[in-house]
Length: 634
Image (cartoon, rainbow, N blue to C red; front, side, top):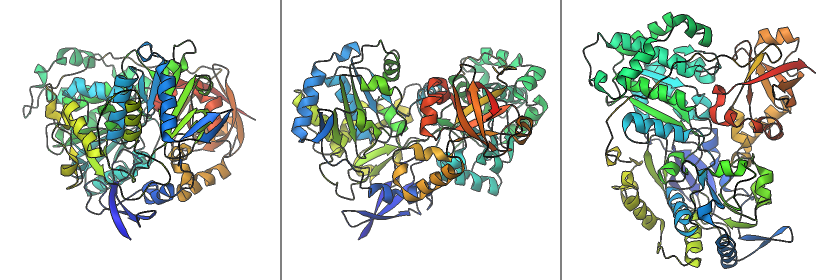
């Protein structure tokens, strides 16, 4: 019996775990005290990873569908069938789509991308959790010259000023939330900007609760006030006024009207000016914002990047700008090239019934939510690769069993570009293989020779193909708690510039008939819509307790609106949208939402498919997306 170090595979924080194992099973979990980010802490998800890894819902053998039912098959039989059937499709014509997983290792992701491009000849790629992350990477590349975080998560520990935009990081990435709380207790100024009064907002020194859809406007107003101070501050590190895009940016900021700002956002400009003075005096600044499935819209991310550049603090050794991912290897998936290309969206093809898509290759579908289910069911071939049984298997024609994250060697890149290595520490039940081995077997059957013998050799191929990883090896990564990939591999790294800005004053789409602005996003409950978390006892118990109180889900409204509607907590109401969709749902009276707004965490499966699934932007923009609704007593 011994403890083996590994990297938690749940969110993008990259916490260090010890797994207590006898080589066959994982019997317990303990935190790694010396890990620089998690510092001996784990959240409720990380503490109970052993329950997930011991579940009896493992896929243990290849499966092939015959006469409507899945039967056991050999690896060779399943591989041959996939090669033959996909060979009948034209990948270059977007007839083959691949949906990757942000939980896969870099080695698995790299091999999958090579399979897509080299064998299937398709550019139709995507990562199920990537909504918003491409916006983050594109915006960071423009502003700082490389697609990744500026600085790292350890800089929270010494920063003077910390700004969190749009995420309840205390619940979505609890260990980072704990580090932020510790920073606030030691004297750092912690400022949050969100439409709802989140748990993170309650822990903050200052919370700006702006009206939905106006984050970019408030950030630009803060930049305007900061710029007014910067023009008389001569202790600057960079010649801000010489950076590309400066003139257009500043001219746009000058047009911001304090009256229009307050009318649109609910925030007074005088309040923002006071905050700008504190920001101006800070020696180091850390800015965090959500990326991935709960990411912000492009306009807001660009406003964040512009503000970061304008602070003139991003070259300070304790400053940072970090897109915080909600899933473990989202950054690595992007680095490996799995996010697809402009004009080749697997999600767009699935949503379009007239697209040429004929076959879909899916890895580790992580959620209980299956979007475009009917379209997927109608495809000629669906291949699923995964470690755990889930609803997606009902749509699959061929299934390949994969190893869990602790059953094979692999690297994972967390939110701040830290690349960490997990070693195999238990055997795999049944015939499960690392993803790269499955994809290599398919490639070999199709006539391609890759010749990889282990994950370390796959990683060497990564370092040859992806410049930012050029100086990394498994051997180097095994000596500590990861190494951040090299930003200097990008020629434009450090050449800061501003995004072009257009100032507008968003108006709520609500009206007399549909007076509530409904925001859709995540709560703690979202973890349990996740296929992985539904296999762990303690987190699942939290979910079940919520279902006992709100079995049909809930919509949060403020006490003032509840009084006007003459409803009380847990009462059922009818919620109708401006497009005619409706649902029956319970009221949760909460002081954390503003009058005239409503908030739904999408953790009830049928609620998602029946109501929210039609609002694609609600999934990609979170609370920046507003659905006009009417709420009536049942």
